[in-house]
Image 1 (cartoon, rainbow, N blue to C red):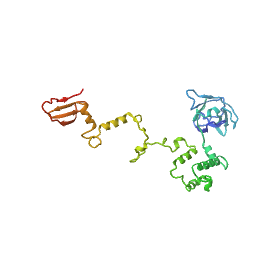
Image 2: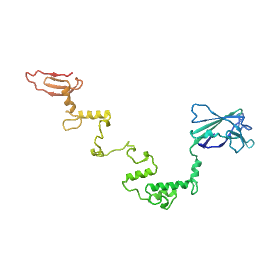
Image 3: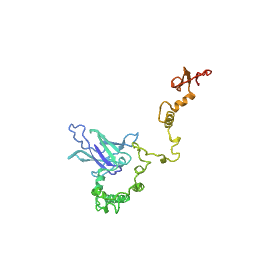
Image 4: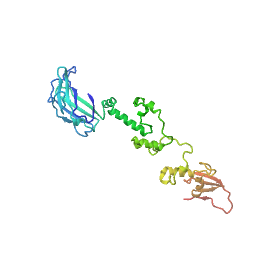
Length: 308
């Protein structure tokens, strides 16, 4: 059995059906008293503890008593009993509470209660409220909010129709906010008690997936020292440095037969001259990076330069 009860409800009575364990037809057990059964409950927020005992006492039908237990009608509704739920079982702080009733000759009865902040009855009460009650107060609040976001006049009432059912048609006749006045719109949303995350603010908009068109970021858009070494991750700085080394000396661009890196290799890496050919090696001093024809003359005996 499952019920839905609002958190913090007090003096709550529920009807439970207790089945006779000896019946093959599912008949209810009659004649039970507060001394015949035991009852425990547990809540979502109990933590590492056992069930809480409910002290069952005799009660009067139709009257709440904490732990009250009384048979409803043994003749016409056999097996039905009123149970007065302890107030402590329904307090805020948990989303559910489970009751367990047991005893000799009866089938174990679990009673699950979902604890909610509001019930459907709360919603229906607001929808069906007469003029001047809570729904009317809600309408007045909506009118005040529409004034705050730039609707001229006295909000919804000035539109000639205060009924929410015609709100879409009425609002469509209103003049829009001044074009480009982003700051004013942001101020209006503040008046509606929007949280910071709801505001039109570059610091809270998720940029994931946005595309920036050609020329969308210009040098003038960056303040002096806006992008410094501290703003670059180590791998980003390394990629910039690597691309500089890979710059083509012949007209720019990446890669090519003559790069900055190859120019520096002749200063630091192994070089060898053999049979009129200069070989400049990569950083392992074993793999050729580039070669060049060498014209030699008598009295110039240098044939290799191999730095450590």
